[in-house]
Image (tube, rainbow, N blue to C red):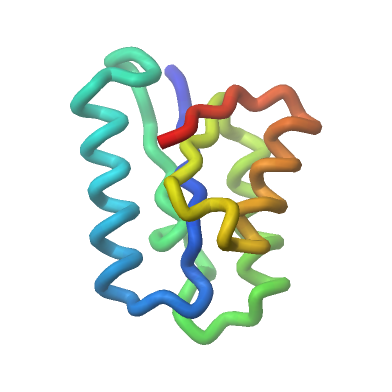
Length: 102
C-alpha cells in the first residue's frame, strides 16, 4: 500500500481554505489513482497533536515524523509559499520519497 502525505501552505491561511484545499487534494489523489488504487492519504490537518495555534516548530516536528512513513508526497500548488512545505519537500528529496506536484 502506498502512503501519500499532502503538503501545502497552512500557516496564515483561514481554516476553511485549508480544509477545502487539503480535502480536495485527497479526492484528487484517490479519484485519479495517482498512486494506485491502494493508497492511504496523510492529511496534516488531522494528524494527532496538530491544532490551529500550535507553534510552527512543534507542527513541523509532527509532520516530518509522519512523512517518514510515507512513500509519496503530494505538493499543493502553493507549496513554495510555505516554509514548512519547503522543509517537507527537502525532507522528501533527502529521503527518497517520491514527489508528485499538483
